Amino acid sequence: MALELIVSGADFEEIAANFAAEERELLVLIAHADFGGLPKAGGSLYTDAEFAAVLDLASGVLSAHAGFLKFLMPNPHRFGNFVKHSIYHVKARTYTAASEDEKMQNRYRNQYLLTAVIEDGMTDPRLEQLKQQLQAQDQQKADQLASLTPPPFYSEAFRSEIRFNVKNESVSPEFVKRCEAHLKQMPDSMVQVIMEAAKKYCLFFMDLCKESAGDQYDPSEFPPVTPDTPAMEMEPYFGIHEAIIETPEDESVTAYRLTGGVDWEPEHGLEICIRDNKVLYLGGFDGNSPWRDYDPDDEWNFVNGIPQA
Image (cartoon, rainbow, N blue to C red; front, side, top):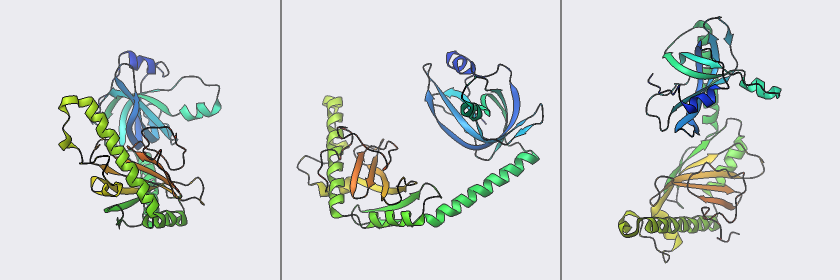
């Protein structure tokens, strides 16, 4: 495994102050690896991988409590990633920072600062048993999600195939079906709002690019959209490809999120949040939710200013 770790310098010393100086050799069963993280002042990325269990090789003690391997790596990183449900031989330091909050102490009792990955593809009878349990649980969740998730459908309104993504197996089938029916039978007035907002998004972004590029601006790189373009003619320039259904905060309210791509801004694409018969947000993808409220003065939310019934 070619994970690039940073184990010296100002960023590392700042974080290491909360961990013991002594390194311990561990076998770690990875539950989930996500290389998001927090950029540090020195240019590194502070991130983590969640584990399901840790075996201390010196003492032979197995801890089956979930926790995190914390580590620094270059930002952006180039190599390596932990593999879910794999077992790694690592060197790490235990968390030592004191907390008067008992809940915080419990949260951090299985947190380690990773200093080296010695070997991957390891095995151990006790960890293998836990690994099989994790895999069985994940398969059960996958089966539950598959049974909840409606098949893709072709939307005549948006001229694209839309697949469904149910985010949690605890979502009720009734809620999923209601969101599916709402999307398939979306009122014409809502489709009109989405088209109007997409047009605003396109014109706004093209104006920004024109202002930034000056004489280098090339209109051929953008859709042939002008202020006079009818909103309902925007459909060829964007696509909605996914309907995301989250765990509802209120089962009686229909709410979901749509995502896709746009020809004028391929980097950030398109995100639309819908709650009942109102479009709450349309703009670039930002991991928004249909369960939150939005600033009516946000110029990057392109439904703002568009009348809705």
